[in-house]
Amino acid sequence: MDRDQRQMSAAAYLYPPVDPFDRRDLEVGEGHSLYVEQCGNPDGIPVVVLHGGPGGGCSPAMRRYFDPARYRVVLFDQRGCGRSRPHASVQDNTTWHLVRDIELIRKTLGIARWIVFGGSWGATLALIYAQSHPDRVAALALRGVFLMTQGELDWFYGGGAGRFWPDLWAKFTGLIPEDEHDDFIAAYHRRLFSGDPVEEAKHARAWASWENALAAIDSNGVTGESSAEYARAFARLENHYFRHLGWLDEETAILNRTDRLAEIPGTIVQGRYDMICPPVSAYRLAEAWPAAKLKFVAKSGHALSEPAISAELVRTMDRYAARADALGLSRG
Image (tube, rainbow, N blue to C red; front, top):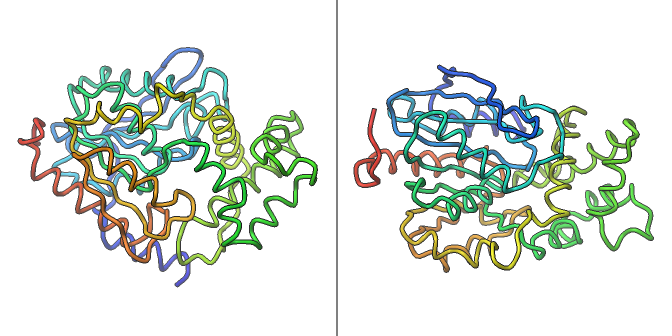
């Protein structure tokens, strides 16, 4: 099955394309401006969508996981990526800045409580936001859980995933001299922030390609090359966040604060063969969070666009819409 066929299969489970009824640039401080959009029903159930990366940006396809007659869908590009400005900037760009930004968006739009929907890094940010503001989160819908731990980074950037994809791992590591192979995140950091546009672009594309090639279970490592602009923001922001372990410490680590999620229902949709965010993280999260339901999706990897994952996420959001009153949320 080629890429176009996969996208068509996933699209079969999604709601029809919809245009935003509101677009704006929101000044959030420290010189950053975020692109924010709303689509669906202006009086519907509020849901905020947190994209992956860090640095991925939101896309029109992300609007389609929600019934537009019942949901008021809020999407935005996080600091430094997509249509937010300044592009690819890591200045004043940390997890805690993003948590503050989400709260500012909520207040600006006049939303009391909302459902938070996120995958991969978006799931990380959703969990941290919910632990920081549990009274503002009615429910969580997560996909491809990433807990921002050293073990997860070691798996993906220390050779674990490379044991399954040795040919692609060789391409990723081959750009780095052997005497720097003890820490690929640090080695790529030196090149992604070198100040040399050609060197930065080359290593940004290599960084993005390594991740994108492993996202879908049936891609066999074949993926189109990212644009230089997208790759630069994606690679620089991911690398910046990973070098700092997401600015989490013992006190703020996600698994150490699951008591803050006790009153928040959650659904975790996890590809059984996720090579980027191994399923053990989702399993550990579900064990520590009794209010969550974990759904392993057979024959699926990491990508949001995989058909079975798309179908499960749409079902999840339809179930939440049917339970809006129980969740304390208004219907449109």
